[in-house]
Length: 317
Ligand code: SF4
Image 1 (tube, rainbow, N blue to C red):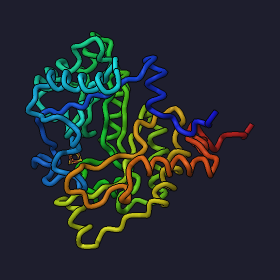
Image 2: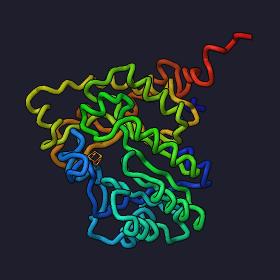
Image 3: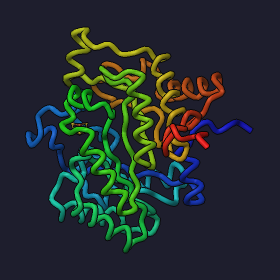
Image 4: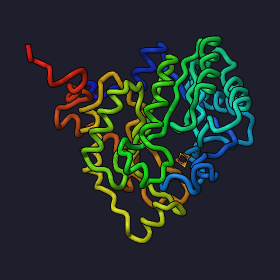
């Protein structure tokens, strides 16, 4: 039997729900405070104009219909029976509370919806929005996951990439979410310009120390028309090699608490205007390279997870 070297999301869902569960991508009208001028304009230096919602249906379609249409697709294609409603694009809590509540309710009406996942920024979640979700969680017995874009724990890099928030807001959001027994998924990019291997390891250590439930990894992609795209076209952006990136992911996994589920090991870029993504190869080839590297090194998630709870006191008697 092959050795399981990292905690896969598909295995986790199978164990938790007894069968495969499919995420229904949903798109609601909105923007992001880092684009509309509240915090800044132009957004994060890598963000494409679709706000990472490039695989979604149009936001002009009511949420209820998006759920139905997506379900038809997943049922026909995969014989799916259980679903998680996934508010994917932009900053889903950056909307009036009433609108947010109505859309989340509309996405969770059916019995076969077992959970809801909501993408947002660490500075766009507060007690009111979380209490609204808590009510839904309790009334409908739903699993609620808040997906927080962080990208890196290096607060200097957060400034460099124009995130518009620091590490402090992220830590604050984690505490508020966890105090309501909701789960957290964190998005990280392990090869941001300015970050090195030490930052990658610290990403793993901080995620583990904060007890997040899931992580989603992404390698840096470059889209035309973004600040990063301009730098790339001017030859001013250095991107590490795929071999170095694979090495970083393996290191990240080694330091990560083995209980944390890897929702995504490798991401995909948008179809349009892509200047660079996954070293010109497919996302699954990058995933395969990471899995092969884990095998070759005979290593696994959590191998070096030994640093919490007073490491210096170990073996002191
Ligand atoms: S927070 Fe998300 S949607 Fe907003 S600019 Fe950054 S990547 Fe884009």
